[in-house]
Image (cartoon, rainbow, N blue to C red; front, side, top):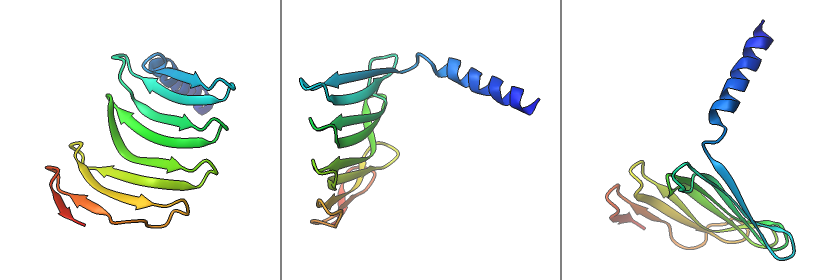
Length: 123
């Protein structure tokens, strides 16, 4: 009985969520995937958006909600090592702080902190 109930819940979730977001993919001329992203029913970016290098390795990961970037961004070198600037946001969408990392995921440069109105408060 529990298995049947579990199966019904999973099927309900699957059919309820199906069609709310559409997956989009683009490709390089060599056939490797270039981008994978999702659009909501209003045509706005939603969920995780991935960008790849032409060798198939992950380049950038961003997360969106209703067309606005939320959370942190991740950047990678072509060799797969993580690098770049990571952004963190207040619940109202204003930038909270940013951090810089080099290809070895080491702190690289100053970190900046902002209040929920977007004013720089600390470096």
